[in-house]
Image (cartoon, rainbow over all chains, first blue to last red; front, side):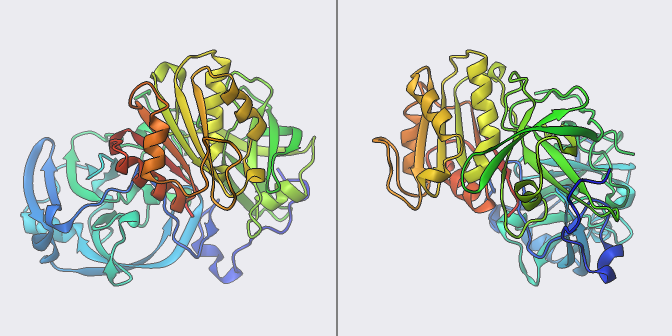
Length: 203
Length: 248
């Protein structure tokens, strides 16, 4: 439906058009969104736990996780609130390298990411491996600011950014696809920006 | 709160039924949806504008009206000069125009009388909008739930819903309004003229009969960060603080 009197808008430059998913606009800043106050997690208190169901498989402290091989990912990111930001540069530890250090193959097809503030979000295990996702430790070469999820956040850049859990403190393999915080509150179970899977009921 | 996954409604057409300027930068638009629409206080809608060549712009706006109000959905939209959707509403939109919207959306920043008392609300600028839906819901439910609203605005003339809020405050029925102006002197005896801080939050909570069960904070990212830290500094547990940020 064409809106009467709406013609100009803020169109993206045509050479970037194909990088912007449907319904998104290009943002130069880095907006902050979260459901509660920003937790201040000190690296000396930080830990990351891999679980299979209720059972812990392996736990890393800050130094131990930082000692794993680092990888860099520069990606476009897409927030469900409709902004897209190009070329965000992250560095961290691939989920593949975390699994290798734990000496396991993914035991289930579903994963829940957990955070220090009680947040959680579900991601299919296949979307976390083969170089697709990492525990990010640096943004633009510097420690990640608390507002943006520091000291460490999950980075799953090909899904809407609520899946990239801030203040991440663990991954839990689950038998079923269990909804996380926003997925229980009406957001999509998968969240592919290119299919515009914002809310439950979207295709 | 429901633990059931919510099924989200698809896009629908709504007609602008009424337009009223609230402050120099904020105007309210009442939308009459074409299909049944039942929201909870604190929820928002997505609005979508479509240009003749198919280009679309969408933004989220909080609902200011209570679910019980029944006269359409009120969105109080602040004009952002570098925006692409809010200038359309302020400069182009007229009564009778049809706009696409989707909602209600959001399952976390919600409060209903049935969630229990008391409640602390903290809003900065147009961040007061979803809190206004909660306050109006309380009034229309004739609820005695103690609610204190701390509302930070730059100047007196930018206090959105000012007359309505002061009228509700004057009823002395358990709703308390605390205004703080950051660029002007306070106009009312117990109001403030500074940015929100922990001491202000302590004093705001002294107006409640006991510690709040939930605190809702809405505004710009800078405001929400400052207000959430002020609440934590005043002894409010982080787990009862719910935030909604514009993003920037």
